[in-house]
Image 1: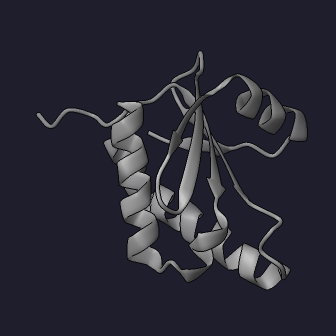
Image 2: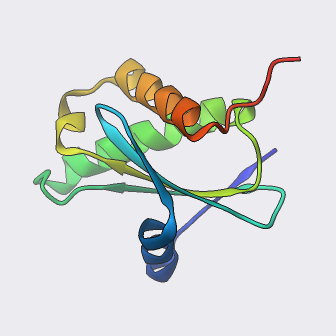
Image 3: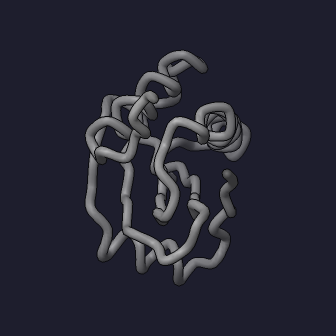
Length: 113
């Protein structure tokens, strides 16, 4: 189990351009299959949210929610999480529920054994 953070701009653009799109109230998920035994994940926030402090707070929330719940999803995907403008009002539980909703829509949750 594990994941790798996507940092390269060209990777972000490739996944956003060719990935499947799933939306929830606060987040958008772009997802592509990946030939590996880990997940590659990127986190970004719309520039419509003014102020880097606010954008970084939302990004930290997304990263922490993903980190704590990465064990419930299948491996082998590239994902970009994009926070919408209304994520500014979200707390940890709102973001977590949005991420779970996106996992279900993308059908990448592991089956319980």
